[in-house]
Each structure stands twice: as C-alpha cells, then as structure tokens.
Length: 286
Ligand SMILES: Nc1ncnc2c1ncn2[C@@H]1O[C@H](COP(=O)(O)OP(=O)(O)OP(=O)(O)O)[C@@H](O)[C@H]1O
Ligand SMILES: [Mg+2]
Image (cartoon, rainbow, N blue to C red):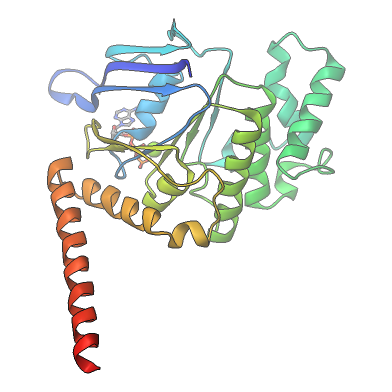
C-alpha cells in the first residue's frame, strides 16, 4: 500500500514568547492508502490543531505534512474534513442536495454530474429522498450524515474527521460508526479520525495512535487485530477488543508502553493463576 499521508516532526505553537502555547510537539506518523487510522487523545491535548495543520488550514510552526508525496502548504483539493458540529457546518439556506453539491463547484464536473454525485453520496449514507429538504428539517444524526455525504461526494484522497460523532446520541453514534466503516471499505477511502473516545477508536480503527496530554505527541501506535467485519455487540464483547481498550486506557492515563505491557502481562498471569486455582478447587470438591 502506498503512503497517503506523511507527517514529519510536526510542531505547532500558538502565540509568541511568554504567551506561547505549544499545542503539538514533534509528531511523526504515516497513514497508508486505504487505511482507517484513529487518533485518540485527552480533551484539549491538541487533536484539532493537528488536524488543522494536516488540512492546511493553519501553517505549522515546524515540521512537514505531505499528501501522496506533495507537501501541504494550503488546503489540498483532494482533502475533505468532517467536523464535530454539524449544525454549524451545513448551510441552512441551501437544500440538502445543494449542500452536498456546494464544494463540487470548484471542480471540473458539469452541473448534471454534480447533481448525480450528490444523489449517489446521499444514497450511500442512507438519505435518498431527502434531497429537497433543508438541514434544519433533519435530526442531528441525519445532518451529520449529510456532512459525511458532502465529504464523500468529493471523492477525497484523504478524509479527515474531527470527533465527528461526539454530538449525537449513543444509538445514532453506533449507526454512524458502522456507516463509516462500511463506506470506507466499499470506497477504499483513506480516513484519519480523531476522537477522545477510547472504545470508538478501537471499534473503528485499523490502527490506533495514542496521544499524550498537551502538548500532543505520540505515545503508541497500535495495530487493531479485530476482524474487518465488526459488530457493535459481539466485537465490543470480544477478548481482543477488551484487552486493546484496556491498553489504550492505561496509555492515556500516563503509563509508558513498557509499564502498560508489564501491567497487562501481570493481569494475564493473575488470570491464569486464578483459572488454575479454580480448576484445582473444582478437582478437590469432587
Ligand atoms: N487559536 C488558538 N489560539 C491559541 N491557543 C489555541 C488556539 N486553538 C487551540 N489553542 C490551544 O491549544 C491547545 C490544544 O487545542 P485543540 O483544540 O487542538 O485541542 P483538542 O485536543 O482538539 O481539544 P478538544 O478535545 O477539546 O477538542 C489548547 O490548550 C487550546 O487552548
Ligand atoms: Mg478538538
């Protein structure tokens, strides 16, 4: 798989001198084409700053970002961002279809091609038939689907998502997570999603990058060994899921990767000892 995104030695500092606040510190990682990578980090650690630097919305104070080998200096044409707050990201005076078509105006597509792209993207997110409605006539979850459709319609090389499901209820969140995984696999998209929700990062990701407290740096880069087909109930109950979420939680609460490994080995050892003791007790009871 070719590398889609390469972040090297990224630093970002807001303000100058005594007022300066370092938000991102020496961050390096890559994302391969077709991968769904999650970044999980504590609130306020610098996740949105990192995404803004990758999206070319702000110029980092140090380091580089490259998208398919091209250095990012402004917002790339083939990059789309979905933000947390759907109510502020859609235009209330445009219909659902027009909202989805809007960013396509700057491309090479004809009017009818744009209309067809929007229709297909809305169908993909389960919103066929809502084309002529206005965003405010839809529920929060449906509005966030429109934001996702708008991003997908552009067929971006990289889709960045900043806590995209943080403002919807738990049930809708599950539906949107499954929608994202399905669409990402069908379209072979490359996605980098930021969240502060540990379970979400493990459930969604092919990989989880764990960030430290502010200023953000990478504490661990964990592959997610879960099967590609995931299910909100059975996946979340599986041993692999439970152990990985524990590992991420420990890392987020300040453990070094070595300390976390030792703790999880000890826990496994305890479990093995307990099982052996239980078996022995059973044997004796006979
Ligand atoms: N425009 C700005 N000017 C100055 N400081 C800023 C600016 N934007 C963010 N910061 C500071 O940088 C730090 C990181 O902010 P950022 O929004 O990137 O964090 P985050 O991880 O996305 O937080 P959250 O989990 O709340 O979304 C915070 O301390 C914040 O106060
Ligand atoms: Mg943020």
